[in-house]
Image (cartoon, rainbow, N blue to C red):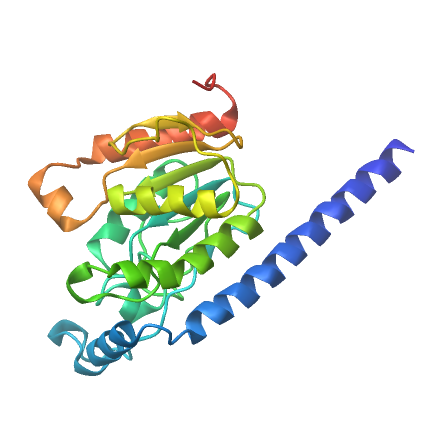
Length: 252
């Protein structure tokens, strides 16, 4: 009887995994097909046509960037927007730019990624127990989306959060993404704590719906080149995420 029960549990988990993969694929198909924001469409396509000299032999993706990772992830990472010559070129979030170099190196170090670098969408990278999204899915001019563009893209974040049912820890990269995560959770019907959580590097909040929220500086060149964000600082974020998921830290 015990073996039969275990077999049924395994079949149930396989079914849930299959359903999660299917629904996330539908979401990502919708993301890639989006043309709602005229300014972003024009910019991403112009960049894909003109290219950067060092990437002149590339066929740029030039479309919105879907989420990426494990559909059963307990760790969700929310970034700002794709880089014009990173995700907009490669078609995968945080891939092909220096921010991605920092992120995937850290994820690999703590067991969330099978390799420490990400250069293109077919480079063999896989994530374990981790999924990555963005507040805006198209590369914006000057890396600055407008308020209307954030609003237009938020339904994708909402659907992602609804579909990723196993998430227990959320790492948010930068204050803008931090604030928009709070907006998204409010729209999902969650009651935010008072006073509202405030962004800072390394801040940790236990949210009323059972998620641990961790703030981090974004691994942008502006932050990493100036020393505002160092590798030890960034690694501590994912070390903490791993400890929270392992259950070795008592929630604050």
